[in-house]
Length: 300
View 1 (cartoon, rainbow, N blue to C red):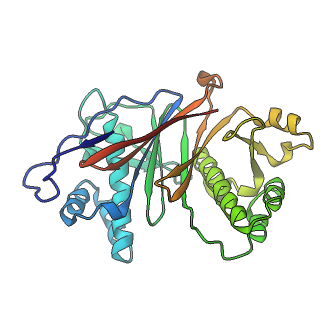
View 2: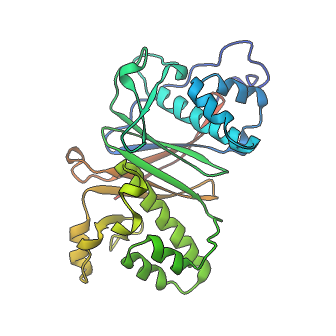
View 3: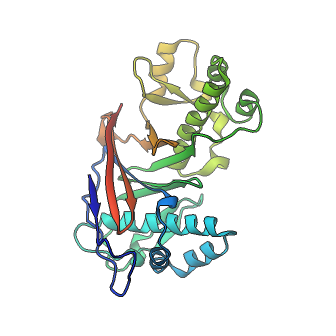
């Protein structure tokens, strides 16, 4: 389903941009994932208008990027965050420019609701991830969210297993070692990376505070796309016992976006969810121009 807004707006900005189409906040068990493809945003005038949404600090950050492509992607990333968060202020219209942000002690960005003009405090969490060719933003309520996107064609300069031994747990390395085809092994390495990165970002502490080799992501027996997290000290030789120890605190959703990227979503499974499945709704957007519903799926 596509929603187009003002077909002529990319040619003229003598009037203000139209309002964002408001959305209800996700339920506790829902994650909304929005993504934009930079190559599809071609209008110079639209990019200039996006720049007007940013704070001076954000503009300075964009200007410090080297090269037009990096500047464009940085601009789109900040625009995607501002327009995505602004959509969910359903009780009153909020200008994306009015949003203010802060960072937690580990550097993870958050909305600074207390200093946001005309904003009601919302239990909303967001996280952003990007490559050169895709930028994504995930949104949840009440529970932290982490997302990661990686290009399917990402190259690994070194031997996959040698590289995995530097970052992954012993159990994950052993899993990769069972895959004889080098290309299939490379793809599984990237998929696993997205899941681990999403968890670290949901945790909100960064890589240095949660090194990849201190935990294991493993598939849940009897499911096609179910994953659980184990601390490395909790992994046992018995698969059934291992699963019992590892399930519960975090939920994972592996995804593919635009036929070109692997992605993963991780949320904390708080007590209010009572172990219910996670529903992930994916939308593609060019902010203020077009929104498209891509998929809606349930993950255990």
